Image (cartoon, rainbow, N blue to C red; front, side, top):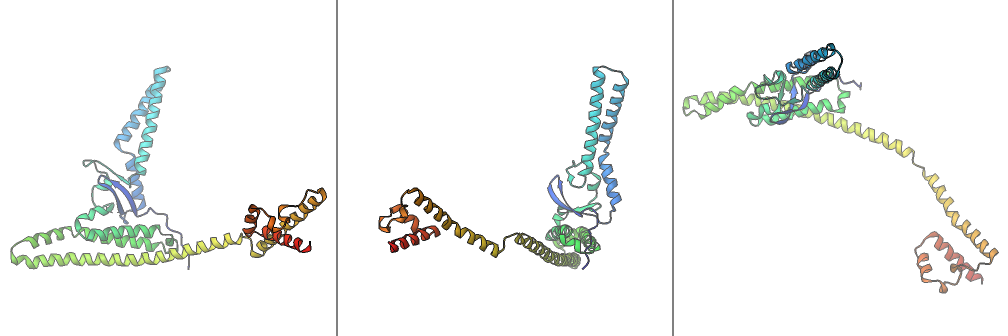
Length: 323
């Protein structure tokens, strides 16, 4: 299998903010990147921003030409600051051209003027009944496919083809609005003679809805495959990470040697302590007395089953046997 790098193109699905709230939108695949760049430039060069910048430049030039003085410096600084603010505002507008559509009803941006010219959004089909659910499913599916890590292993033309097919499906749904309205009007007409016309209108709409549902089903099949490959990739990454981490863990033989080395430590310390006791004549330790003379606290400590406690008990018993 050959791995492909994903094409350097804009994501076809964006989460945007509109006057009626956030919504997902699908971009028109027929619009080239050069046109999108032109729209960004146009959004950044709005008339108000351009006029404000030009006025600020003129103010700064007049202040510089009027000579020195506090008023000239103040006017020049204000002009420069306003120019900078205009540049930042233009850049901000261009950067958020696709995702911020909170424009007034009387001043829509170029992208919002004609539905389907630049994009479709989920709420564009809210009035189509059950078809609106299929639209949201299709838009979400295109977005998931283009974000999927499995996309690096798919031919770049496949996601673009999926985008184009889904866009055509939305265009077909958009063109059924008049037929849906007509079917509703004919169904409400009391004249029995228009019954056949109403049935024909409903049939035409049903054919489109069924075709869109087929697109939803096939897109779901694509997502099932990409999700399965994502799971494989994730498992491979976790397996590699697990092997790398476990390779740094000490092996059982090393741990066993460590345990054996620690096991001898209490015996060595006991030998030195008892030898020091004998040299200095400090007297016996409590655990060297007969067990009947041990204090309650010492009995509790030795009853906990620690290695040192058991070793001391064995030594005491051996001394009692020799005496």
